[in-house]
Image (cartoon, rainbow, N blue to C red; front, side):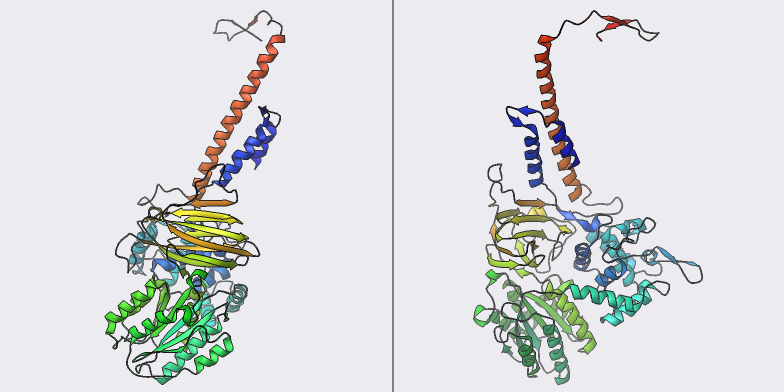
Length: 625
């Protein structure tokens, strides 16, 4: 802005064939702003902050599969410790613990300096399991933790990894309930010498979760095992668990719809998606679900699930972009309807029908191969195993499940159109699709409002802090082409059901920016974007892209030549400024020469040369003064 003002002022009186040069400058700067290039990864930018940054860090850690479910504890710590990095003291000069406030060392009540959480993540002697975690962190993130220094934790991803590594060193598992997490935080994280209290943890978390209420539209079907191995008592616990999950959902015909299937020797539809439209009627129906007994016919339960996700039974059309979400709970290996092989085949059909599936295995008799086949990728987010139907374990599972449901994407196919979608300000819709080798073009038609699309293959819910592609559309039509080569990342392996690298799962978020945001979206195979030129490019559409980026610590970097989003933008702007400055300088020189050519006609001949005294070691010379 300052550079533009200076240039505009300095050439405000010049013109070229009647065109003010400042108008040329305005045009060039607008063109540069329209085509600003580069994605974004704020998790690797020092001293960034905010909920979007924290969510991106946690998603990256979760999708790595390096650690078990932390039950929402990591996000709560980030808020309690630094208000997601927004606390003014987060990045103070003499402290480098970052958003998660990971101490290097501390002074105990006796005045003795003790190693802090960060040094604990370096203590492979006391924690030999760290060696394997180091290897996996380097494989997935490209970060050599052996050479990471405390100062690196000013980058949010490093701070989050340090906090998670430190917690993984604790023998006691992370508890589920808020009160228990508050005690765990005080004992193992904040410490006896820390200024925090358990009540402060509880108060901060409750304040956070009051303002982050999740309002999503879902079609949800429960598929519950009611076979003889469960027993009537444990099935009552399953009923209570189902009611707890439903109580957290916003039930209504235009909000979230719920159906329920039980299976034992065969599957039974207890109620379809269109049967109950209020929380109270739905809870009463769940209370009345009968316990069947019998064998375990999981394949029939999954086949019935596919049938129930039909508009004839209350499921909304795929064109509305409503996520289809299933919750399967079982305690054993299928022994009816074809057994485990039939279960895996039926599970594949579920995935082919664009149903996101959360699989829960209970007890020691479960077949984890079946559970993994039933669940949507990745297992770290969609598979849960608990030891029993204990109310406490199911309650913790309910919290994790509700978090996942709140962010569940609608699975769409290439060529599918999403019509008449509407978002409020800062409300988001989530989608996922398998990107074919030919790539796809995403087109968004905004009838009213202003929406932003963020796309990535690295996290399920890309946002303003982390994305590979961005498309911003304001009351017009915008399109964006993505090819499979844009997502070639050597640090990301194939999915468990993916046999070739021909397709890549891409996630994208569409966020509303105005009070009302009505849009439609379409996906087309190949590049069918409208060619951009000065005559046809809409000035209220902006798209950006970023190649895959990692940030290794040390010299063994697999993608060291990759430019960061900030670097790419700076380089582009610098190039634009250099070109602009050259044009301005040329015009300025040309104008001066023309002026001098005109004036020389009226100038008297120069006076005789005058002697100029040279240096004592040089010959005198003449010059025009």
